[in-house]
Image 1 (cartoon, rainbow, N blue to C red):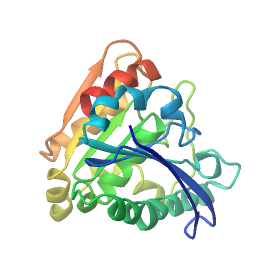
Image 2: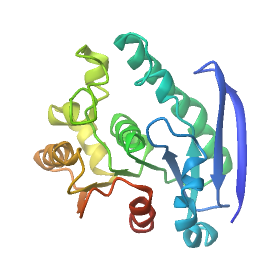
Image 3: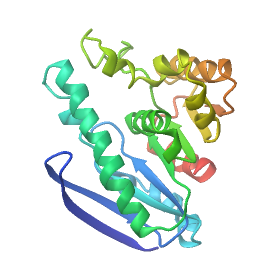
Length: 241
């Protein structure tokens, strides 16, 4: 299995950013890390190994990007600054990572995927920019970071504005009225996966219902137990990526 490390200074983030690429060809997948995790953690947790057969066969090429969650959602900055920093991270993906992928890989498809907070990142960017993606996979994620749940706080401490609204998929999908955007989202393959004992179960059901109300086809899977652990993600990536 080919493995390549890349690092460059991001103009969008004004700091060095790193990523790992696994595979030599195939459907490119931007794989977002879990909360506060790093670009190498999916490799360390043997989640990349679980996809070895597909990667070596040239069916998928995995781009494990880094996280700046500790500078955005989980920083000590004011809530308004947290969402602005997240916006800079989105620009890094759109203006730096995706062009990098397009130079590396000629496949016209593009998948956005992630686990836990990485699942939020994957779904949020795909729903906000549906013309860029052909598939999105969200595993064990919550799609409204403003809600308070056991062990998971509102990441904006009660603060709310339009920028936050348009970065919370459960909220903006439920109220989406632009038929052009709805048509674009319908073209994507959408997969949402959550455990029956996961704290984010109801939020996932809410997003699935919002998609149903817009008649947007998607696959929604509820796994037994909590399923919010690497051992489950190793199984999920084999099935859904």
